[in-house]
Length: 181
Image (tube, rainbow, N blue to C red):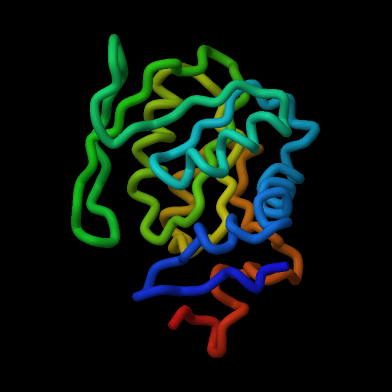
């Protein structure tokens, strides 16, 4: 099933995985399984590949989809600036349809290495009083300290797609030496 997954120039090539016949459905099932009964009202997807997996995750969970852009959105929006990402770039993140107080929210993205954009997005969610359920990732390479900072709520958790012995368990455990090429 995961024959299409590969690392290209040090980056997770999730697009190839999504191009497989059963790939998209398998990825979305893996991302949403842990939150199927959590009462998620909104899925927040980070630009750009977070849109590709976040929208379908929202459909599966029966939730609304909220895109977070790395640029301006039309109309009124909330904004924050991320810490430096893996390339040393800071992004100004914008969101329009922010969930409200008490809304259970799931952040979804394809890959997190440093977590700077996820941390900034979590700040936007919390600023509105919404409850962060967790962060669902296809590839999780977050340092433990970032994971702990991201997930302040007791119910929150990071799920690695296929955690529990499958391909992405433990970040890059599927690769020799547990590291990506």
